[in-house]
Length: 76
Image (cartoon, rainbow, N blue to C red; front, side):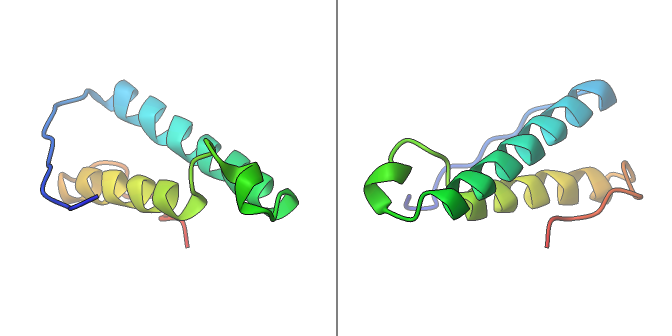
């Protein structure tokens, strides 16, 4: 990815929570899958855990900047 594409959209609190839950769940599943499947060809089509972690943390950071979800933690 060249890094030139940005998206801006508005979500209410419930939708933000749903998106964060979905991304975190997908991250957990992908992390487990990557631990169990070491060969690169077995990982084709499976989201990379580090990319999902980055996405979750960016979404949460934006929510926190708006004063929302202060108690939620970033994925380390």
